[in-house]
Amino acid sequence: MNLANTLTASAENHGQKTAMFWGDAEYTYGRLLDNSLWAAKRLQQELGVKPGDRVGIWLKNCPEFIFALFGIWHAGAVAVPINNFLKAYEVNYILNYAGLDVLFSDSAFSDQFDELRSGRPDLRIFLIQDFPSQETEHAGFVPPARNEQD
Image (cartoon, rainbow, N blue to C red; front, side, top):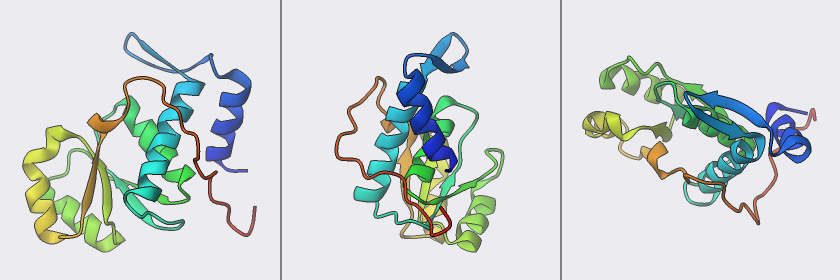
């Protein structure tokens, strides 16, 4: 069992129950799982993320941080949270040191993306604005990756 599997079980058993609040918004376990699986599928199929790859999360506090985190885990990858107060040159250091080629971020940081790419030309940025605003269908998704200790 891992946290990605725990979320899946929670959504299966309590899909319509509230999993988190963000201001006046409520997110059900079903929505949390759907957005996480949507992200995982995109990470795997469009961005080529494989189990064990590191994926950065450079976001302010927001629901999408949770979607990204669980999406990374569902893809079998390793999440690398990055402090949202860091400047691009500091984030570049982390990207290079951790070997990150995929980064979840927000268009609010877009003025710094060119500097990030100058230090990491193959960097692919997954904008949180791309997350679906409603529950999605995640048919055909490959379940979370397992390691040999599972």
